[in-house]
Image 1: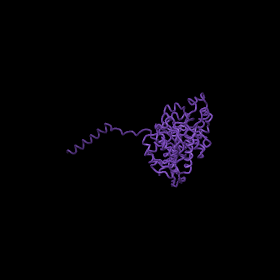
Image 2: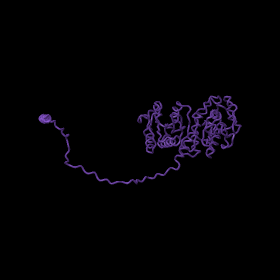
Image 3: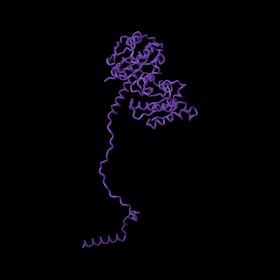
Image 4: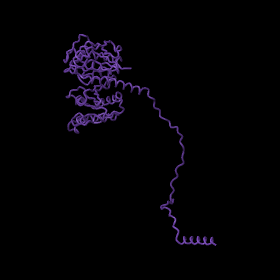
Length: 398
């Protein structure tokens, strides 16, 4: 059965609608899932008219409940009124409020189980701020909404997986935020996610250093010696295969990331700068939640909003990743369900009693030299034999 994927429209003044519509007209998308967009049908039509002519005639299936969604259609739940106005390329309070209403309704349906996974289009972290949203991004909001104590921001691509200890922490506060306990908690979440969400039996995790050159044994900072290394040691004791700390520049420059299943970076730009330099079509995944949530790895892109220039590849990958992770979780749950109890096997084989090996005899003569070869017959004996043969011949002649 196809999963139902909830897609929030994000900021109405950005490229959210554009990348969503470009993803949903891809025939492969409708083959693998049933998508439901949380936004507004009139707003979707407005954005479609700014795109190529093939989008101008799109029809939308406006529904009130995800259960009403139809295969092969662009299903939309109206989360805000038709009077909502877009101002492409601008940050407005109205855009922030519309983005929040979409997110709230999608989370409600996800909580009730009427949709299977969540894909979020980009929001503006500033204009969405209000009493109902005092968070630095989707990750923190979703962790609070679904009651998860520890979540993890992880970037996914075909090349690598990069997770963060600090998500959107100001640089001036990073060193104070990083603690041994925090690193250990993130390593545990990352390890479990790699096992359950990506079916990696024994994940290998690289941990990056905080300071240049990994601190140079305390000359350029002590966090590696006092915080990061002890956290790695404790993680190893608890069965997490963590290695490091590695200096970030050399680690990525030498391509060492290919030897690991994931990388744990200390802060946002340390991990995301090399990640996006290598792949701009990656996916942002919130690990550690009981629900599946992904998003494209780009922002609202106000500078190209309404110009039909947005690349939908990252949004497509986000949809595919949500489906893949959902399936991996279901398969792992089935494999672990009703495990056979372990019963020690009783050895019922008949044991035979053997006579003890006799001790080695003492003073036993041992041949030290090979037996002598028989001696050659002496010349005298050979002459006697010849004489006898001659006598026999003479007797016969007589």
